[in-house]
Image (cartoon, rainbow, N blue to C red; front, top):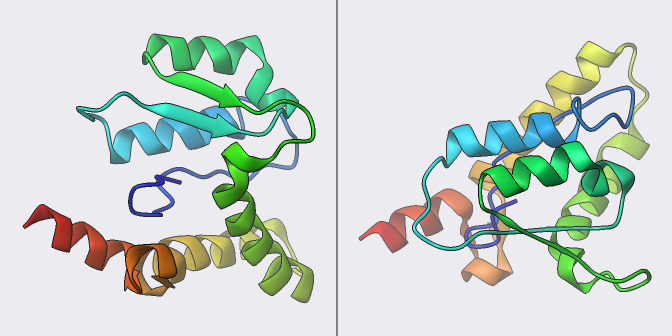
Length: 139
């Protein structure tokens, strides 16, 4: 999630917590969507093993991105992303029994790329959608 406009710019689904299938895949998607940024970037996350592994940390270093992980029990750095995960889990995943993984991937895609990124209004953005906010700030 880009905290500037609250848009989900990289995401991945996997049956495992392997970093190459999860955070590295999501990070690479994000970098394709927003490859150049004139500002210093910070990657906020919890202390999960996929974020702390050498493979992912080296990838962030290669892109000159600072990593921020709060100390154990302190979730403030990652609160916005955790709020997003809560919405996805409580309103969609826990309410649905999927017949197979492809159906779940399709629904998650629609929730993220259509509803959350295009239609959902954010209090933080003065009740604009991520796209509306992006267009307004480009002017």
